[in-house]
Amino acid sequence: MEDKNRLKIDTRLIYGKSELQPEETDWLNSMKFIRTSYCDNLHAKCYINEDEALITSMNLYEFSQQNNNEMGIIVNREKESELYHSIYEETKRLIRVSDEVQISVKKVKKYSNNKSNNKKNSNNSIKTGFCIRCKTKITLDPLHPYCTKCYTSWKKYKDSNYSEKYCHICGKEMKTSLNKPSCYSCFKKNRNKISFPKPKKLA
Image (tube, rainbow, N blue to C red; front, side):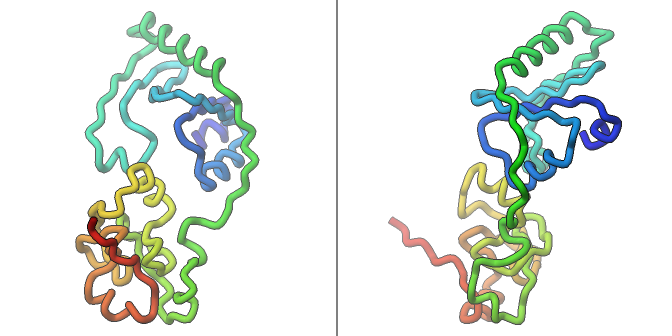
């Protein structure tokens, strides 16, 4: 999409179901030749250009690529002209019934990469932590142990006990979660220095 924008090729992006993240709106705001529309009940995933159309179950999320079993079909305009035309006409209909969005939202503070909301961390000598899903370096804050990108994926299901891969504090590979973002050793060393999620009582 960035390449098409550099070539000044008109590109249409239609999304639905959820609001765009600040990073996404900021990126779209920098793309002068990408026009964005919102369709409230959109659930289809279709990627089409002048030569081919791809219809697939996969969302434009890294989470889908890494964790889901997806399928799709690709249709060539030259070889399957009638089917391609039908897809193209439906795409035009979706554009007509969608509301064009004027991207004006500026980038705001990221979820946890810049400044932590954890006041205890401000006096702590350890400033850097790790995303418990991808190990990206982020601000140390066990209450917010995801990078912005992984938090967006996690928020889709909001399972606080979903098994992740890394300790938020030392970055070592081990089973963690939003409720338990660090290994026991790191928790023991830092529990009096920084805030950790409070254990939830079982009903």
